[in-house]
Amino acid sequence: MTGAQLSAFQANSGIAPAAMAAVLVGAVFSALLVWGVWAIRTAYVGWAENRLSQRQFLGVVVRFLAMYLVLTFFLLS
Image 1: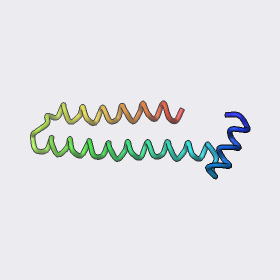
Image 2: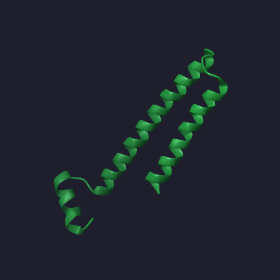
Image 3: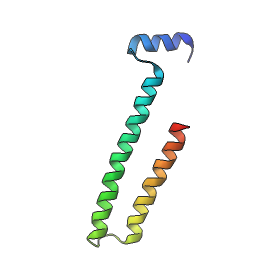
Image 4: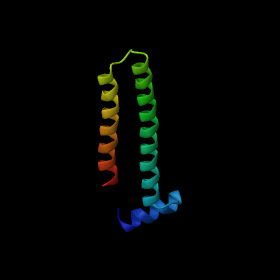
């Protein structure tokens, strides 16, 4: 962003663009972690009640970890 764009953004929003970016990244990671806990807990309940195999349960966990790692790489690098 140019200097004029930075000053206009800060004047209209009242916060710096870097702070807004940190809030948005934090919100994305918060939503991802809440969803991950829900997905893993639901898969665990299914596994405990013998509705999912251990392989399917581990598939849910591995997919969540892969999504977390990919988002970490793209958003924090």
